[in-house]
Image 1 (cartoon, rainbow, N blue to C red):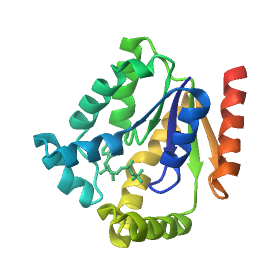
Image 2 (tube, helix red, strand yellow; image 1 turned 180 degrees about the horizontal axis):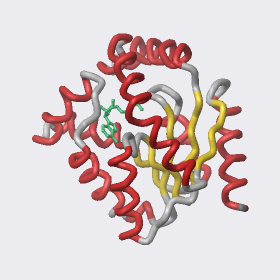
Image 3 (cartoon, helix red, strand yellow; image 1 turned 120 degrees about the vertical axis):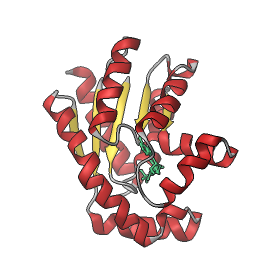
Length: 191
Ligand code: ADP
């Protein structure tokens, strides 16, 4: 199955994507992880991305698309993939579309995790205290939420227009949300 997971920063995409990877035996592709690896490696691309990420802004579409193409070429994607953190704006949605047409690998489902902003702010605060991710400081989280509302929310409408979108309630325990997600995907697979 080829799946896009949508949701605000801190909505649980990464957590759920890791579970789905195991349950469905498909690749988990997080553009945030790919970018953090580039930052850690200190590559020229990583150096460029670092400041942008720490400001809570989006890294340029070209850079992220390049990383994604490289990742999709790896053999573990042959059974499918979960995209976590991509696409994040309409230009990326169009680029993904073109790429998947070229690869002859259309999407099967897009699932959006709905979580109220107040919960997001709380979750990121806890993650900041535990993991010290620079972009989880409360001020940057507010910035990322604004970027999400302005640039990423329209991506959900794009997929809704194509009949691919299912929104699920992303508030609750990890297991419960995982079950909701699987149920949504089963419905899609049988449709
Ligand atoms: P979250 O979903 O919690 O915001 P991610 O790990 O997905 O966390 O992303 C962290 C940061 O990496 C983003 O705030 C952004 O700067 C950058 N990033 C990740 N994916 C993309 C993307 N598709 N396009 C542009 N920037 C991205």
